[in-house]
Structures are given as structure tokens and as C-alpha cells.
Amino acid sequence: MAEFKNPNQQGGGDNKSLLVMMVVLVTVFFGLQYFRAKNNPQTVSPNSTQSATSGGQTAAQPGMSPAANAPVALSPAAAASSVPAVQAPAESTTVVENELYRITFTNRGAQVTSWVLKKYKDSDGKPLNIVHTDAAKKFGYPLSLYTYDSAQTTGLSQALYVPSATGDLAAPASLTFKYSDGGTQVTKTFSFDETYVLHADVEVTRNGAPVRALINWPGGFGDQDNASAYASGQLDVARNAKEEHLAAKKVSGGETLNGPFDWAGTSDNYFAAIFLPDSPETSTVATLHNTLDVAKTIRRTGLGSGAPAKGAIEVPILGAALGDTSGHTQTRVYVGPKAVNVLRSIRATGNTISLEPLLDFGFFGPIGKYLFLALQFIHAHVVSSWPGAWGWSIVLLTVLINVILLPLRIKTMQSGLKMQRIQPQMDAIKERYKKYKATDPKRNEMNVEIMKLQKDNGVNMFGGCIPTLIQFPLLIAFFSMLPKVVELRQSHWFWLPDLSSADPYHILPIVMIVSQFLVQFYTPSPGVDPQQQKMMAFMMPAVSGYMTWNYASGLALYWTIGNLISIIQQSVMNRTSIGREMREIAAKRARRKAGTPTTISGKR
Image (tube, rainbow, N blue to C red; front, top):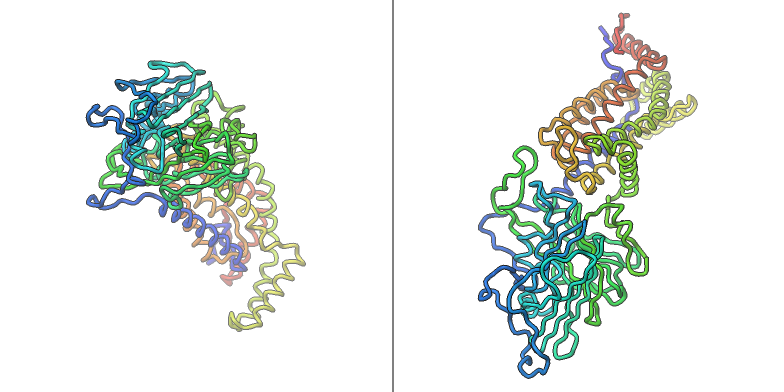
């Protein structure tokens, strides 16, 4: 006896479009996961050999005893030179501060040992030191000098410079470090204002001749404490107003790139250290790529977050150094968040391009950008004072998107009804041709007849896929955008501590799986074979659950709210005249297949 259980189970038909959509969805989702896994750092044997630093250079280590870290002679002609030596008698520090940062310089190497961004916190809730301390100890500190002679680089990083000021300086301010051993002379001047940008002026000479000394950000950021953070590291360059983002696997250590450069540097998902040279045409960039064992500092995601990982873990540490072919390097340096409003206000020399392109949202980048701008608008003008404001911004944006798509859902249902009305005629055509094999040319005639029938009755075979075709790029854009928006970093929503990280309790992914199943259950899909419908009803929740289980909880929130809205909308539409007629047609087909009349109790 036939029984109508589900509006979805409505006989066979042409399901090619559905299968195509399923294949595309599964392929893209699993392809993205494969790409992420391939670029994540891999655990290696604890007995593996530590990678050497580029060029065999040894980084300066401020704070070591004078005997262990004493200055080295930089020029064999120092004794014969008439230039007086300029060296500090002891190590000292200078702190430069404004409302955005607190930078601690040491005169040993005239470099930075701490760079605290006041508006951001690390995973322990402390003010974020953007300097990767472990990487700096091994590969060098920010604003140190990089030369093409490893011994000279080491000497410059260990020398005791004479600072123009010690103690605390409030920006706007200027700080100059000078050093001379009689043959090699170094002058480093840094100017600060109220923004994240400072200006650096570096000149190194040996016996009066210029030395190619590049100002350096050796690599890594202090917010990198998990595998995905290290995997997100990249080299960013912009030439002639065209930007390029290179993943770690495409960056060679010690390679020199010739200008012109509008800007160049390195970044991760949320923060960046970018050089904006005063003379783009004569600027050059040295790329640095090292590896670091972070087994003692890396953190796990999910429950138990904060515990150190077990076993040796080698991760990529990227860096960049910028210089000028003249030997006299003058550049602005941006060190701060990849916040769109901040990046947009910083432009390269000549006003050619801003730093906004640092925000790279992937293939669907333009869609991701406008989704975020809409999210930002809602946050600023609607929910800014609400607890968990960014989470509510995602909820309201999801509601808005689904309201806009509602007319398309109605059109899809109307198209489905037309498909149901001609389903008996389509079945009759298929019955006439079922004796032919799939490879028989006669099958083409069947397809022609079916397409003509659909055209004559105003049926679009892809009508049921239109909402999916629109929502699919939105979903992928959210997928690419959410982990790269610093505004969502550490933004909480109810039990979610960080919308850019996975739900620690997996509550949202579980709710999303259930809601995805209900969406499949309540949404009519005329023309789809019942077996294919059953397969999709379980495959779609499985795929979506897998994708959100350990991914940014903001994506799971967007997907879950969208599913709940779809269930409500579909339940209402199933009660309309269109929905009732669709159920009646499905009931008649069920009775016809059963061969006996029966009373149908349909779902509402």
C-alpha cells in the first residue's frame, strides 16, 4: 500500500542537474580540506634534524651575558681608519609608545625585542606581543639588519649601538642608533607617529663605501600558536599596483626579488609586517624561509585547547628584508592588524595602491569582501552595543540573505510544480525508450523529446538548482572570509569563545547536521529519483558536518541559521496552494504505482 511520507520522494525523472550540483559541492569542499591539510605543518620524528637558518646566519640574542654575546669586529681595516669608534659601554633599552603599540628597542643590534599591540590579546588573554619570541631568538629580531655576508649580519646584530634616547618615549618621536668600529659605520633612525606606521632610515658604510644592508622582519608573528596559524603565513608583494600572495611552499630562503615594489612584507591570517619603500623603483626584497620546532608552544584546537602538542612539529617561519640598491634604505614600516579600515588608509609612495589588498579572500574574494562589508555595516549600525555583537551580525546577515532569496525559493517551487504536472508524460517518453541501451543513439531522441516537452510547458530543468547556485558561492566566500577577518578574532557569542575558531563543544555542527537533514526532508525535489533523494538526504548533512566540525564556528553559525530559516520558509510554502497541489500529485503517483486506491496522509 502506498503511503506519502515525504514531499521529497516524488518519483523518478531527470536528475542530472542534481547530481552535477552534488558532485561540484562535494569536490570543492573536500578539495578545500585537502588544500588546507596539504599546507598545514606536519608532525615529524622527534629525532629529525633541525633545519639551519638561511645562509647559516646566527641571530642576535639580547639579554645574554656580554662575554657570550660580545660585539665582533666588522672591518679588518678598523685599526687603520681615522673614523672614531662609536660603541655603547652596556646594553640598554628604549620604549616607544602611542595608543596603538608599545615597542621595546635594545641597543644591542638596534632592534626590537617586543612589539605589543595594545588593542589585541594573545590566546592567554595577555596583551599581544607581535614578535615571535622563539623565532626571533633563532633567526633574528624585527628591524635588525640583513646583509649578504652572514658574519657581517651577525656582527651588526650583536654590536652595542649608541641610542639618542633611553627609557620611555611618547610618539610622535624619533630614535636614532649609531655604531662605528672605525671602519664600518651604521646609522639607524626611526620616526614614530600616532598610527601603526613608522619610518626607518638605514645607512651602512664600510671605509666610506655603501654596504647593502636591508632592514629586516626575520619571520613569524606572536599570535601564531596553532598549526593553521603557521600554515597561513605568506609573502605579500605589490608591484605596479598588482599584488601577489605567496604561500610558504613557494618562498625560497635567501632569494632576492628586484623592484619596483609598492610594498612588500609578510603576514598571517590576522597581522602583517609590510615595508613601503620611499623609492619603489630601486627597492629590493630578500625572502627568508626557515623552519622551527614548536612542539612545546603549539596549541591544540577544541576541548583541551591551551595544552601543548606532543611530538616534534616543524613549521614554516617566513620573513622579508627590504633594501635599496643605493645602499641607503628609507622606508615606512606597517606592523599591525589586517583590519580593512586601517589598511585602506595606508597608501604606497606615490599614492598608487593601499594595503587593502593584503586581505585576500581567495577565488570568491570579491563576494567575500562585500559579505564582510555588509557584516561590518550591521555590526557598526545595528548591534554594536549587544553582547556578542559579531555573532549577532552573522545571524542578521544570514536572515537578510534568506529574505532576499525567498522569491527565488518560490519560483523554484513553482518550477517544481510544473515539473510534477508533466512527470507522467516524461515517464511515458522514457518508457518508450527504455529498451535502448544508454549508448544507443536513440537515447538522444528521448532527451530531445523531454527537453521539448519541458520547453512547451515552461519548465526549466535547472529551476530547482537556482537557489543552490546562488548560495553556493556565498557559502564558499564565507568559508574563505571568516578565518581571515581580524575583527572576528576572539569575538565571542554565547558559548563560542572565538567565532574564527571551531566550536569547542561541537554544538553548532551537530545542530547544523540535524537541520541540514530536515532541509532535505521538507524541500520538494520533483524529477529526482527516490534513491538519489535518500542518498542526498544523508550525504549533505555528512559533508556539511565534516566541514564545520573543526572549522571557524562563524561558518557553522551562518549555515545553521540559514538551515533553520529554510525549514520555516519551506514549511509555510508546503501549506500554500502550490504545496498542496504538489502533495496531491505525489499522492496520485504513489497510488498509481501501488496499483490500488489508498488514503493519503501527507506531511504538512
